[in-house]
Each structure stands twice: as C-alpha cells, then as structure tokens.
Length: 272
Image (cartoon, rainbow, N blue to C red; front, side, top):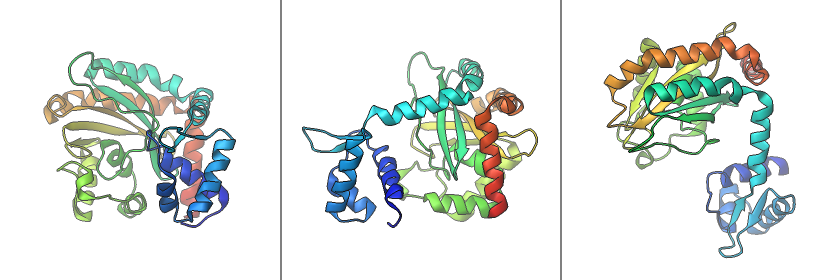
C-alpha cells in the first residue's frame, strides 16, 4: 500500500475505526503493507497527538474519542442533523423501525443520523459513522441506482465485494445479479433487501436528489428484523419513505453541507 505519510495515517485511522476492541501492531503493519518498525513509528505519532491510544492490558491500538469529537463537531456545524432529525423521527414513529440518513461523499455512503422507532422486542440499531457495503444494502443500491451501470460498477468494485460468507444469502453474487437489482430499484423508485447485507435483517431506502441538478446527496432508509419488515410492510411504508426523501431534497438548499456535497460530486464527474 503506497502513499504519503498523511495518506497512511488516514488509512490507519480508517482501519482502526472498524475495530472498536483494538488491533495488534502486526495486524496494522500487515494491513498497511509496511514494516512493523514503520507501523510502530506511525502509531507512536498518532498516540502522541491523541488520535489513538495503546491498551495497557492487550497492547492493542484503539482510536480515542478525539476522532468522534471531530465528526460530531462537523455535523453540528453543518446543520444536516438539525435538518434531518425531525423527518427521521416521524419516519421511525410511523414505521416502528430504525430510520437513518446516509450522506454521499468520495464514492462512499456514511450514516450520520438516525431515529429508533422500535420500543420493544427485536431492535436493529448499529452505530453511526459506519459506511455500508454498497452492492448488497438498500442504502447502497438506492444511491447506485441513480448512476449509470458503468459508474455504479466502478464504485462497488473499488469498495470490494468481500467474501461470500460475509453477507446474507440474498446478496447479489454476480455482476449480472447486481445490475438486475439496480434495474429493479430504478423501476420501483426505492430499494428493498431482505437477508442480503446480513441474515435476519431487512431494509428499504430511497435517494435524496438535489432539486436542481438531480444528483444524489444521500439516502434515507428504514431497517429492521426480516420477520417484521417484510415486502408487504415495505409497500405500506413506501409513500412515507418517498415523502421523507422529497422533503429532504426540497430542504437541501438550507444545508451548506448538502449543497457543498452536491457541488463536489458534480465537479468530480466533470473531471472524470
């Protein structure tokens, strides 16, 4: 893995962000494809500036809350959560499931806000700040369906398809199956998956489109246990989901974060 020191530092931070229990130094070195001594120097610097710490019991390296504070401060100043939260709250109440907002940026989606509608029984409630696997999640499919097939394939290939055992039994297993799924999403206006990203969970999602240029700014999704969020239930919730993304689309000009995201996406497309 090549790149500048800054590139590698961010790659390490991204790697650690998916391992809350910490990672041994050797695993970091292997992941970064660098000598263990070089990884040790990098980690020492990240510890020095407060981005990471070394667990005194396991000697594993973990991120500190300083990284989280950066993200929360940015979201607070952007206004995107204040804009979306009442809409997500209504959608969660109506569905009785988890409603989430994901934002498009740098060929990825990141979940940035949520509202939990399930008050008892099974609850699906993963952490915020994660990036969904695009080819097999409702949020990923809803966004990718707004692109042409060539661009969608480029993005999912860049992220990777993982191993067959990493996902649920209904995840697309071939390029043709993935493209067929995109076609279905375009036809029905929203994405619906069951036992795809993982066994036992279902989700539906639709894309937030900029009201002027039509570019996808993000997605709104509803997720829950498959036994509750069935295809029939998804049809009942379709109008509520579409209404939520339309409201966010029309309100997007009020958020500098969303409008900036759209401008960056257009600029990247123009130079591609």
